[in-house]
Image 1 (cartoon, rainbow, N blue to C red):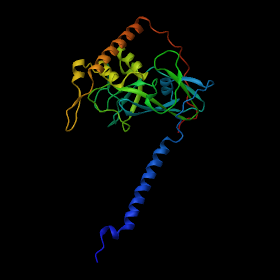
Image 2: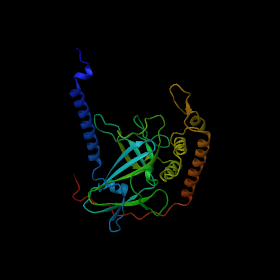
Image 3: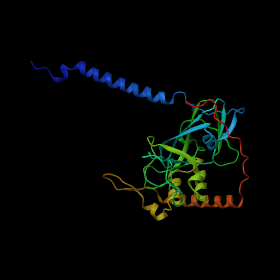
Image 4: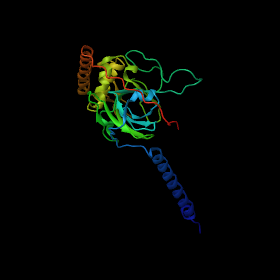
Length: 290
């Protein structure tokens, strides 16, 4: 009597299931290990010395990694590399620039700006926004910066890392959408673009209160100088069904209003410049290299 194939290999089948289960457990353990020890609930230590985010990066007191989830945002991993607690003052907005692998050495991490701003060359889109809106998930809230916009502050214990979510839009239409596997460098908004209206728009995006489609249309209008007619023609390509517009008429009208608001804020800032914030001493790196 012939025995069916399924009847002759129960042990092998069980071993396969066990192997797949073990691999899944190992992968889950590996992912958990990556975030072990990272602080997600932000706190404030009134005794900690304060440092601006970018001043901290330049003095090597802070190390910042941007993990872009997609065009809508992601999170920052901010490490305190000193042996003292630090309170980090966040800027009103930030920009993340995709860093391409360098071949043959030399050159900076990203291309030169063109037009109203943006990194040249291929790769993924630059992304701009900030932390005021909480990024749509994860992490705790942080203090008010006192100066409006998306500013805030939080403290990091010595030699610890915090995870902070951010909200963003893409700034270079036609390039690949940001994703976690891409390497991004955080830069000052003013370093990325000299367009005052775009700078103000990114401050508004950082609040997390602007609908993502409206913010994206406004961003491409300012960063890529795309006309409203061009934006109205953008479509999502569908297989087997008609394509659908990327932006509705109502979203484009709201985006036009948002751009007008950003331009108005830029004019107001130009005619009524803010009082310069006193320069805080930079924090030197102490027992921090690992």
